[in-house]
Image (tube, rainbow, N blue to C red):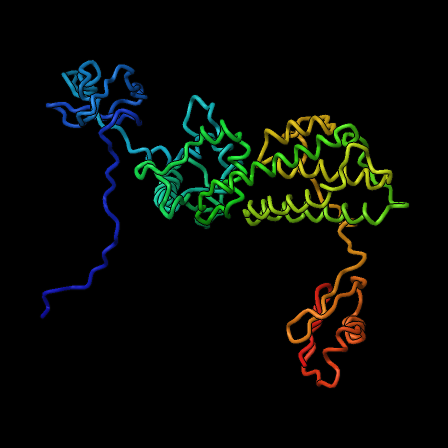
Length: 425
């Protein structure tokens, strides 16, 4: 009794920042028998790694074997000294590099306060789960210490906690044959092989299409083949109509055919979907899927000879160009090649991202599905602004529906405008 007391224990431990290896930032310290541990003067920084280190594989730091690097003079007394041969853990640099990136050409100081105020915080941080958690801890610590020391400005409003990163995306791992792909397991697919056989664009497209970035990606040779087939399909479509696809994309509002309106609506719906998936949701796989649906929408319309309908001709030209613009961030090489074929006058990478035309998104008619006890019993088209009452009456008047509700009591009705009418009998 009365021999113990309450205590708070944090799970923080001292951080060993040194590594016994050649590559890394040298630790600017000199050991002197008379003066002890002495910091290298600012005027003598940076300490530069020698270029003649030998790697024997026998352990220990290669720097320790270089007498001309190790032997030096003490900055304090001028006597013999010995340099520190360990280098900093790479986390020491990765914990603040994003601050330096704001002004990489600054030669008189580490940071440019105005550049940091302009660029920080980082809009999007992406990393694997282990790296991101550890690195975020260190980076936030470095940022706050540098701010408290007055080395960097505070980019947040007074009184608010300064944070270096606005958003975090933790990416998944690549899984092959049920195991995490890693060098230690020897199950890594050589990217050089993929690039040589399929091209870099196919490798990129498969990687982003196979799974959302935050989920693990199951490696599939068939998936790589599928990505390659899609890109070849786009190439063949443009090759078929290359003689006329580079023409005018203007769709005149008067005398526009139903086929042209349908394709134009699909094109602008795709712009909305892809923009939302890329900018807000980071779901690149569904963005690619939306573009694939757009390609399906005009693939059978492109032939060696252009359509007689000028409105449809213009709608196809616009759809092809929009396809290339939406795919460009994922497969920049093939889209740039095709862009020239369809008459792009400026580099694809310098062409603005497309903006959806709200007028083109308006549905002139929607398909309504009629369900009776959960099974589809009929369909009809209706105006998008049709009232629920009108939709229900049309559903009840359908001959097939009447056959399934005759002599029965309707217990419940549900009308979802633009989608379905559900009857429970």
